[in-house]
Image 1 (tube, rainbow, N blue to C red):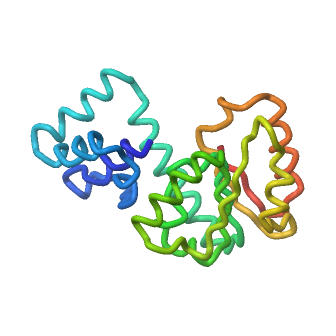
Image 2 (cartoon, rainbow, N blue to C red; image 1 turned 180 degrees about the vertical axis):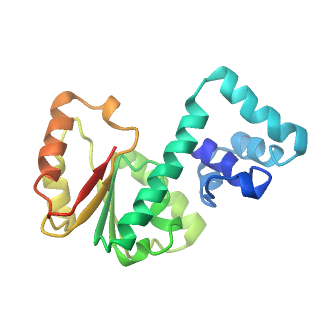
Length: 195
């Protein structure tokens, strides 16, 4: 997804872009950063998405559309003064750093410890210090339940929460999905879960 978000961020004309993610390129290996750079050229800029769409039909376009939809719904939740945001399976998602106003919330990024180690190292290179409003919650869904990890991280179930669970459930066991849904059912009235 970081590649797709980076490509969308440099798409021309700018008026055609569904969103911008200035961090996405920083999560790519050098060869993919080069592809993003080349995609700014007029002909290559059309060939790169065409190749991706031929090779993996629907992956890029649905990922880009999904990103825009979720961004819009997160912004709506922020206008409704949601107090906490949880991003399950956060991966290289950078909503906590790029959506205006989200810094007023506590944002819990939940992901596998190995993925979080890579992400935090890259964020330090991109940002310097990690933002104080983000709490990293290391969790392997196959080995530990969400409730214990969130309690240890200071998550408050009595506080209105918006949870993003993007593109993760198909990789989890039925038991892990059920346990996660049961846990979020205990959050404050007005909380929302988007997946």
